[in-house]
Length: 304
Ligand code: PPE
Image (cartoon, rainbow, N blue to C red; front, top):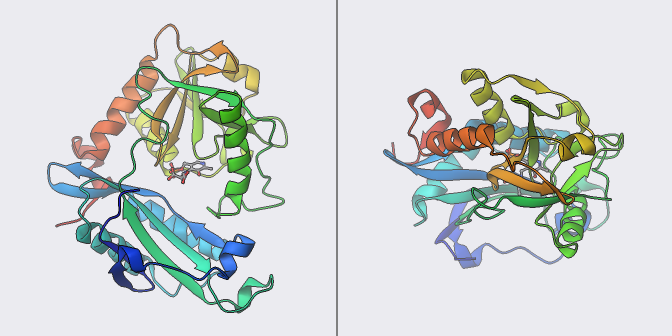
């Protein structure tokens, strides 16, 4: 990781190397950390943060689900993200707000812990590499996606990512690039850090929120594109064999962007072209870089 100059920590900007916490930090031991992933892009009007409002809202909702009192309003978190990006050298960056139960007492009860809030920004290339040509080779994991009866999937909690990491390691060990997790009903849920879409006979679809997924902001962006472009779109459940026989499959996420899938468990996907994925990926690329006027409402300029 290439260091930036500042990190926002508990209300102020501190030098990158000083943003440290104690090894007995409560959240490190019990998984009590909620976080976001946001990106800032270069636009014709300078660096701008994409869909910051939606990310801050989800951050506050994650905190609410875990009964964490952040002590900062949506506006304060928003302003902190802007100030941070402005203070750091990168023109395009990934922004990681995180809130966690901090150092003080050990023992499971999180309610006695103080909550720390930090925001870091750093350069981070496409999560799954440049997939525009080769595409991602994915495999359906034997790890089942966490179920909202056990853990709230809608909260972006660090603990959820133990499930993701198990699936990711399994996929990599088997020689694939990425995992696809099914839910406890055996239906397609999502990737370890991405939502998933498929295209069959020109119809775009993605699993509904009720399938136990994180309601992705990139997923929402793609749904909005589909509406605007008059692409037929449904939220519906799919089995893994429906993925095997899809014309196109792609992942979406802030880190991953729109990442084309070229294979699922040895079945080639998209051999006959990926016109819908390519069209949506191109729109996404242009929208985040401020090149489409109707989507400029999604961009918060860092230097107004
Ligand atoms: N599902 C999961 C489980 C998930 O972690 C993400 C984001 C998404 C869907 C897509 O959500 P959105 O970014 O709002 O479109 N994963 C974040 C963290 C990845 C990481 O490895 O760290 C991200 O993409 O920022």
